[in-house]
Length: 290
Ligand code: NAD
View 1: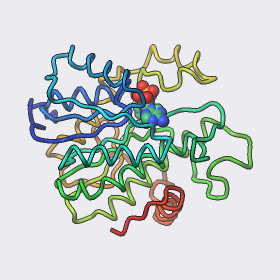
View 2: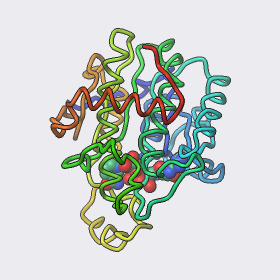
View 3: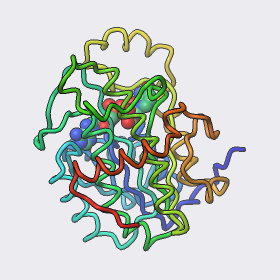
């Protein structure tokens, strides 16, 4: 059932990563259309400001937007983002972990971590853990993470999580990180159970964005994009998870097209989820006691 009442998010404060382009920009725009105050996160000030201008041109009100520049590949930058957010906002009702990358080549972040793992999993892991107090104090609150159907057929290789010892493969690195998004969501949901915080993730569909544009698969992606859905359609399930009363008590689930869907078998392996959580704590230096 569609739930499209306008202004249903009035009074809600939402933080959306990866919101200067693609699906994230449409999530930010959609939340603003529903009356929320939206804080965009992007690496460059210019891109954040230009995204806000684009969203305003679509009819949203200027006083509902702000942005924080941050690079999710850098743990120092994530910590700075949290400091800036908590010093400006007393509440956080919706956190959307949407930023993501597809990397053709193995690259390391400033922290010396494989880039895909860092941006797609460890960045959102650290950001979420550090914002949990705010989410707790704002409950009912929701955490939404953009995963992908690319998690299927994938595994978490704890012996070589960062692909140091084998030939790097962008598809495997991306798929592993998207499986990590689901395992993280399930373990997080278990840890915050009873607090009024929910955590869910979703696959947006095959969406016409620049995600793979600059990779070795760029040309094939561009050609296939003709058949992909628009970023606005790709944002729909995130907006549903952020706002619908139908999912206010649902947590730890994977959604496609607004429906709870069975993820891969690996995504339901509780030992894997717990082990990933511990490794993520070690790699980010953050510990969550809940
Ligand atoms: P996109 O490239 O338009 O969006 C990715 C966003 O992440 C960009 O705004 C980018 O600036 C941001 N980002 C990348 N690295 C960052 C960093 N180090 N620090 C901060 N921000 C960073 O592509 P998109 O398709 O809109 O991707 C959004 C999410 O959707 C990703 O998590 C992606 O894995 C997921 N997804 C996309 C598709 C698809 O078909 N496009 C399918 C499944 C899942």
